[in-house]
Structures are given as C-alpha cells and as structure tokens.
Length: 476
Image 1 (cartoon, rainbow, N blue to C red):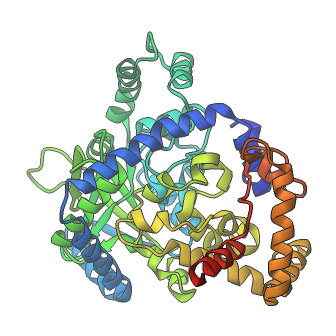
Image 2: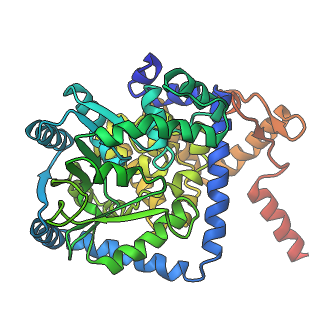
Image 3: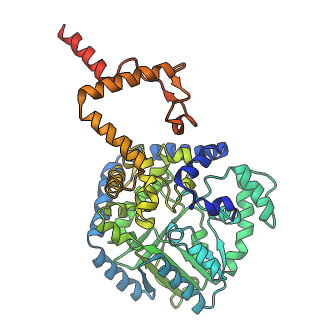
C-alpha cells in the first residue's frame, strides 16, 4: 500500500483535507460519479408517486426493529439454524475477524473470494484475511480496482470513485494477464471478468455481507449489480456472511419496502440486476450451493449507539445518497474523513467507532444545510446528530482553546445587541474594502477559506441595517 494512504488515517483531518483540495484529478473523479447519481436519484424519486409514504413506512420498520432487536435476533437465529446455517455472534470487530479466520482454518480454506461489504471494511476483515495468509480476492469491480491499487474505498457504493477511468485502464494494463487494449469501459470490464473468473471457480470460501436479514425465515438478502456476489456465494464449498445486527427486518414484505427505497436512493434504478436470498447450505438434491453456511452477526458499537442517543443511525440502508448530495464530500472525497464511512453518515458514526476525541473534526466540518436528511430514504436526522456530537465535544472541552475563546467573545457580543450591531457594521465595511468584482480572494485570519475558494463580498448593509431601513419605509 502506498505510504500516503497508510499515513492518511494517522494524519490530521485538516492535513487530509488540504491534500484532497490540492488534487484536481480527485475533483474530476468525484464530479463524474456523484453528479450522475444525483440526477438519476431525482428522476427515480419523481417517477415514484409513492416514495414519500414508502419512506415513512421504511423509517417505521427500522425503528420497530431497533426497539425490538433482541426479539428479532432470537427469531432470526432460530430460523437460520433450522435451515442448516451456523450463527455466530461477535461483540467487537476483532472478535468478528477471529470467528471468520477460525472458520477458514477449520474448513481448510486457502482461496477466499469476497463480495463487497462495508461491514467487512468496518471490522478490518480484508487485512485480517491477508494477515492470516489466505489468498483474498475482491470480486466487486470497484473493490478489485482498490485491491490492485493497494488502496482504500472512498465511497460505500462506488469504492473506486476517486480513480479516473484513464487511471484504471493503466492499472489493468499493469496487473491483468490479458489487459484491455483501451480505456473503453466495456473493454475494461471484459478484462476484469477474464481476470476474476478463475478465482470464482477455484475459491474454497466465499464471503459476503448482507443487505437484509429476514427474521421469520432466517434468510440473507444480498443486493448487487454485477453478479459477483452470486458467484462468490454459490460456487465455494463454504459461504460466510458478515452482517451488522441492524440489518434485521421482520419479514419478506418489509425487506421489499426497504429494497425499493435503497435502490432508488443508491443508483437511481427501479431494482438492481441481482437481488438474491440465501437460506442455509446446499440441501439434498440441490445442484449448487455451499456445503457450509455461516452467519456472523456483529455488534461493534451498534448497541452503544442506542445507549448514546443516536439509535436512528441504525436505520441506515448504506445507500450513499447523503454523501452524493453533501457539499463537503463533493469537495474533499471519502479518504479525507479518515474512517471507513465517509460523508455525513461517517461524520455521525465515526465518533462511535474511533471515539469523539479522535474524530471531533468530522461533525464540525458539516455545513448543517440539511440536504443529507432530505435525501435519506429512511429520514435519518443527520444534522441533529452532528449538532449533538458538537455539543458533546464542547462539553468535554475537546475544542482548541483559541476556538473556545473566540466563541466566548462572540457570545459576549451576541448577547449585547447594540454591541453586536456595531461590530457587524464595522466588519461589513472592512470586508467590502477587500472585495474585488464581488469576491474576496484573500481574507486575513481566514486563509483556510480563501486558499481554495473566494469569499463572497458582503452587501453594503447588514441584515439588521436593511431590516431597519425597510421598517422605516413602511412607517412612512
């Protein structure tokens, strides 16, 4: 793995942001994908008159499961075991990885194919498999790119979003046995298919995530657009599912409600190419399927989210809509966030995984414009959560002293209207002197802003000055 990526999580948030903003190719790569995603989602939602009531129903389904999590865990385990699956519980990320590695060793597996799973990334499973000496093959096209580049995912739906098509073609030419002859998308997909097919056919173990866990049947649902999950879970003699406990739904009808919301929000489609339900290992008379079927149910902070008052985050369907519409993510990309989950959802979840002291910059970076909640298919109150983390950070004294003193001065002035109006009036006049052509390109004491973008020149009068002027006109 390149040193820059190894060091990225250890660097400060501001350092990662500075590196991202200084990379013009990153902006091009992000825009190519997120702009299309926003347009397709908008069209898909507009074509579905029932989106709003389905969104409300999806929210209520997820909240019901969260309130009754213990009941549905017991029901799912009972029905999954009845189908022949072996259910394991993991309280932490390391415990989950240990369970998976132990299964691989006991079944004498050597080659492991893996379908894309954010839960797997969250618990560090790719590194655990590598450290255990297993031959890990990422089968999702974007994850294949990330693996070849010794890279990390930067988006939960499009992990290789930060790579331009031209760079991917060069990567394939370097690593594929039969590389593509151009950077045409079709040629590159064909090259990846040729490269991955022997791994699909020769794998001992297939590992997948789960989009939904169906409590009343014990079935596991996967949702993909490439078919790699089906080749990963069907051909190997052992199938291991790693899933967060929040993926539970009561029954199939509830899964379909959430599925319709997920797909439209993630890719702007009516339905994905592959929606597959796995229910236990191969039975007598079956022509394919695994001999062993293991399900690892992972907590890793989820019950702590309930205790810490952000249980609404457990509604998350991992659609990526919040980051596609986030003005911050679209400027800095996913790696700048430092954690597994980028964007607004990452800013809300990373303090749970890494601690608030190590990640307090993430909630503070949000503009709180509310767009993330507007597009969330299950109405997660992300701005409220981020404000909550800010309040906790302030209460715990985690902000730099300079920032606390500045805010103290601002609070002193803001609580004295005459002083506040006098000060803002002077500030407006000073800022207007710095403006050229409607913009300020160099702002003293705020170079962090103007280093990468211009600051708008303020109006000639403050809001209150304009309000008073309009009020006098009305009185006349």
